[in-house]
Image 1: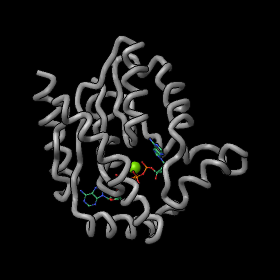
Image 2: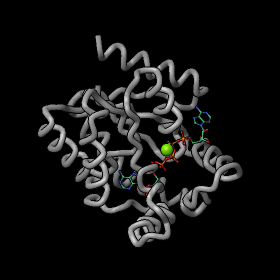
Image 3: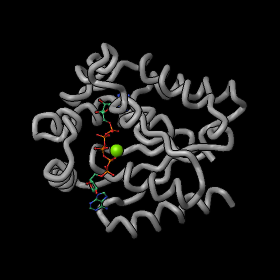
Image 4: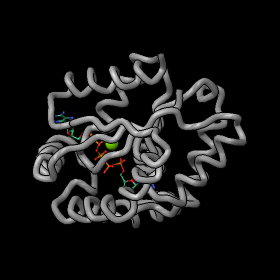
Length: 189
Ligand code: AP5
Ligand code: MG
C-alpha cells in the first residue's frame, strides 16, 4: 500500500503516520523530517533552512530528488506512507510518474481536517516543548496560507480520481487513528 497523508500544519500527519507505520509495518516517509535532518552547517542545510524556517516550501526539484533517492531503498518496495508530500501539483505529477516507473501507484489519500484555531493552538503548544524553527506565529500563518494556495489543489487532484478518504482530525489521537485504520482496511479489502 502507498498512502498519501495531506492536511494543514499541525493536523496530526506525523503523529498518525508514526502509529500507522508500526501498525501496518510500513515505512514512514516525511519530507519535512528529511529536510530538517540535513546538517544546518552545510551549504545545502543553509539553503533548506532559508525556505522552511519562514514557512515557505522547499523547491519541488530538491524535494523530489531527496524523495526519489529514499524510494529506491529496498524497504519501500512493498509500500510506504507519504507524510507531507506531495505538496504541490508539480510534486503530485512527478510522484505519479516515478511510481509508474516502479510499477506502483498511490492507493489511498488520507485527508486530515481540523479547524484553523485548533491547528494554531497545537503548534504553539508544541513550540513550548520542541524547538522547530517554523513553530512561531508568523511562520505558522505563512504555512497555513501556503497550504491553502499550493497543497489544497493536490487534494482536488486526488479526489477527482476517487482516492481520497477524509478524516476529522479534531478528535483525540486514538479516535483519529481508529478512523484512519477503518478507511484503510476498507480500501484494502
Ligand atoms: P512538515 O514537517 O511536513 O510540517 P507541516 O506540514 O507544517 O506539519 P507539522 O509537522 O507541523 O504537523 P503534522 O500535521 O505532522 O502534525 P503533528 O503530528 O506534528 O514540513 C515542514 C516544512 O518542510 C514545510 O513548511 C516546508 O517548508 C518543508 N517541506 C516539507 N515537505 C515538503 C514538500 N513536500 N515540498 C516542499 N517543502 C516541504 O501534530 C502537531 C501537534 O499536535 C503535536 O504536538 C501533536 O502532539 C499534536 N496533536 C496531534 N494530533 C492531535 C490531536 N488529535 N489532538 C490534539 N493534539 C494533537
Ligand atoms: Mg509533521
